[in-house]
Amino acid sequence: MKIALTGLPKSGKTTIFNALTGSEHSTDKYIPADSINIGVVQITDPRITQLSQLYKPKKTIYAHIEYRDYPGIFSQDIENAESSMIQDLKSCEGFALVLRNFVDDELDAIVGERNPLKDLMRFEEEMVLSDLIVAENRLERIELSYKRGVKTPAIQNEEKLLKLVCEDLREGLPLRNMELGAEDAKSLRGFQFFSQKPLLLLVNCGEDEYNQQEELLSQLSGRGYLAIAIAGRFEEELSKLDDEEAQVFMEDMGIASSIRDRLTQLSYQLMGYISFFTVGDDEVRAWTITRGDNALTAAGKIHSDLARGFIRAECFSYDDIIRHGNEKILREKGLFRLEGKEYVVKDGDVISIRFNV
Ligand SMILES: Nc1nc2c(ncn2[C@@H]2O[C@H](COP(=O)(O)OP(=O)(O)OP(=O)(O)O)[C@@H](O)[C@H]2O)c(=O)[nH]1
Ligand SMILES: [Mg+2]
Image (cartoon, rainbow, N blue to C red):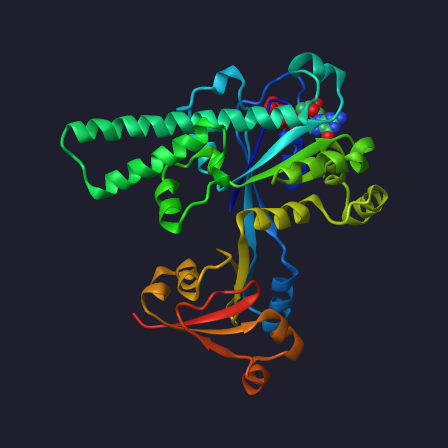
């Protein structure tokens, strides 16, 4: 999973990135960032740790999230929609938008006073506008191909869909809120529209104001956003301490879990992802799929051969194997299931695919 840390210049993206990844990239007040920082965070799902203790495999493979920290957007230098930075940003599956809500007199002079709601609106407007340009360009090209006599049902469907898209965008509505059937959603995916990306808001606040963000957060969730407060600079400092030391400061602040764990959980929620597991002597491993995906899709995640030659999925739940300790007991108790292609995989399923190619 690739999540972009994006936002206006100096909102604290790199500070949060450093906290998340334990890196030390420059967070200079005066020098605008001009390159992307990339960090991979392993998701130490305790369920994988437990399964690994049970199966004692040669390899234990956790899932991971790749965070990409971008330079501030809407600064003139990267406004060009064709820029490689923008293309790179579009390749991310979800956006974590950092909204500055900390006080800093020097930054006020450079980027203006903090105003998270205004920054959010600005972001949404720019994303919607950029999408509208893409959609209108495509419609113009469709018009041209009609003139050249190319008018297939597929293009006509695309035209119909893009016209609906443009209607929403002209009203300033982000596409992520548009109700789309599975087919339509799929045909729009190729455009990588900005405003269709799942959006998570990270309100970056000062340490002293960390516990005063409820009103803003409830305003944001009232508007349908998934939003949390992060004391960015404080978290960056925490990431330099060992776990025990960090724990003391976290308790002081009323922070329940590490920034990594919080963002991992939110990223899964944002993307609608769940985990299933494969186990054995060789390898215990976590896999990520979308909630609602079936056993065939899960098989394809592991290897395309498994999907092609799918016979059935042998399946039991993480909770059951931990409770009973071995697969033999699960079989005896009828907790070891055989499922077909259409079985909807649940979070925490342990799956083995029977296949034949
Ligand atoms: N007080 C306070 N300062 C912060 C916080 N987060 C970031 N800063 C400061 O804000 C400045 C900019 O932080 P960065 O993390 O570099 O911001 P950025 O969004 O990555 O900046 P660009 O990539 O250049 O757009 C630095 O001086 C940080 O120390 C915070 O939570 N509280
Ligand atoms: Mg930065």
